[in-house]
Image (cartoon, rainbow, N blue to C red; front, side, top):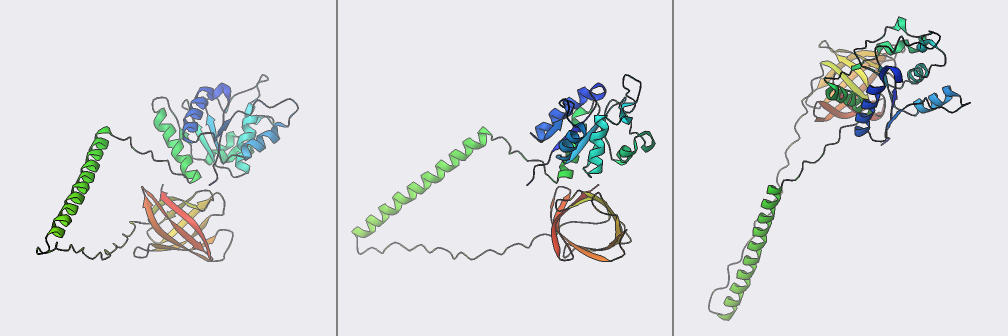
Length: 321
């Protein structure tokens, strides 16, 4: 599995303290996969190429936005974000142009900028769903950001085994000792009984112990997965970026994805088979297609299965929005 990386984009004089704290928390969840700071570019280097290479090597970009992020100016009172050589602008523009997921993180009560207030190559940033991080709820807010990255990467948070309890270990050792002791006593009594039976030929021999036949137990049928399509969902096919899909009660649905055109069509779900059938056409293509999704299992609020489209099978997961 490819280990996916995160790039943190920020201004030192706008959100330096927050960026450092966010870096520490993310690095504890994704160790060695968080990158920030491209300001230390050597003399004579093409900074646009350096940014393009470093941002392009990551799989998600976090844009930390403070109150002064949009209006920060240089020594000539020019807004930095509108300068051609502004590294923050180039980092975000590079990610947007390469369809790298961009997550705005609002700190210090900042608000999302409107498309009209941004340079043309950053206008799409206004339509990205933002995460707000505040001091009173810092742990909770960063937890939401981590969950968002886990969904973008298609990763599940590792589950740590519970610490062993001394009391349970002691009880287990006692139980093992009793079992071993019982086996030893049974063996001694059996040998002793055989010796006694061999010394007196007139006594009937020991009654043979007949073991019951070990017939295979019936296997329980797998329980059907409790999946109800109607509603708004986040989904992912294979290693593609997650998308959004809405299933309506009239068996019509619409889906959007960062990697493909918007699609719409009709749906039908068979709870008995666990099969969701989609009949659809892309907005730039009038050809009708059919996809069959088999829901196989559930973990928490997330469903997993397979999707088959035109003979191609891929992994599939979906969860409520």
